Structures are given as C-alpha cells and as structure tokens.
Image (tube, rainbow, N blue to C red):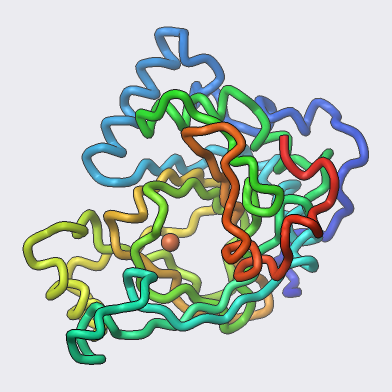
Length: 290
Ligand SMILES: [Fe+2]
C-alpha cells in the first residue's frame, strides 16, 4: 500500500448514524431519497433523460467525503477475499464466428484479469451493504432505467460485489451481456485503470468496422471517463463498447458493482458463479442476500 492509500480500518460492528445510506449520499446535490417529492422526481427525470440520450448517467460526488473514506477503507479490507479470474474473450463475450477469419472483429481476443469480492464476503453491517439495501436508492436507479418493478439481485455472490483491479488488472474491450450496470467508484489506482468507451455503437450500420478499428488501437470515438472516487455510474453496457485499461501500482482500483433485476429471486447461473467467484451456491455464507 502506498502512503496515500486509505487507512485500513475494520468495518464498524454496529450501524451508527454515519452508516445509514442517507448519511453517506450528498442528498442536497442529489435528492434521490424521495421520488414522490417534486424535487426528487424532477432530478430523477433529468437523470433518466441523460441515460436515454447518452447511455450513461454519471453522478460525481454522489458519496460525501467522510463516507467515501470509510467505504474505501472497508472495501480495501474486503479486497483480501477477492477471487481472481483471468480470461480471453471477444468483444461480444460469445464463441465468435467460425465463418469469418480469426482477425475479424467478431473473433479478435481481448484479455481480462480482475478480482471480485462476493456479496457474502462483505460484512452484513458494512456501509456498502447499508447503501445497497437502501430502498430509495434502488427505486431511483429503477426509475432512471425505466424499469418497474425493480428488485435487488438475489444472487448470494453477485448481488453487490466489489471489482478489484490489482497491478496488471484490466478488462479488455467488450459489450456487456446485461443491459445496464451500476457501479460506484471508490478508489482509483496509482496509474492506469481508465474506463474508456465508444458510446452507443451497438446496431450501428458500421458497428463491426468501428469495433475493428478500436481493437486496432485507433482512438477516434473513444471517450475516457474520469475516475473520480465517490461517483455513481449507471451505464448501458450492452450498447456501448468499453474497457478498463491496465492498472499499475500497488493501490488497487476498487469498484463495487450494484446489481438489480426486473424479477424477484433472480440469480446467476452456476457457470457464472464458478467463473467470477470460484464457488457454487452450496458454498454461500448464510444471510448473503437481502
Ligand atoms: Fe463491462
């Protein structure tokens, strides 16, 4: 750990006032606590429009400064339990297209090396779980995405996990399988770990050509999203090509991933659980969801 990394602190054993979700969020800037109020609804409408028009809704400073330090310290403690997965994949995260050359955009291979702390390895009384389990936040995100009904994901490992990129960690260019992803930027690495994307090119008439050019390293159309700790990001990842560049240095890049579903009790497949957490449901800690 470098000198400027957050102090490693044990998670709080009891939920004090500082651990309540509403005390962690800058509610004066982002009134997400009450969708039924005029102010709350107007703000959520703005966010929904931004998401519809650009494929992402970015809320910098969503977490206030003191809570941010505490959330990052907690996540650093939990990061010891990350399971690391190294894989090679195409931009579409599928088996590719055998009818075209290996150099085609459909077949080019990208590298990914990322760790993930499973939800059941995150303490019940942690700030992150208080935040994830706060209904107004779920309702706000569902509203922005235009989803109703909207539920927290019921997977014991993937409901809310923490992505951990250590030295050499990266996530190669890809489109997500899921329609949207919600992440919280908690801790930037010393270098690298940039989130780059090419907005809303899925289904574009030149999609394959654009993907091919980006895989070749061309920068035209590539946007870099600044990593500002405390930012909440709602991102339509299956329409937008994106990647995380290789991380350098001893301070890990820490990004919790908050997952939701349009059906209650929805979970990941066993193969996804094995891939990202190296475990099956039978190995889940009790009380993992909620
Ligand atoms: Fe992704």
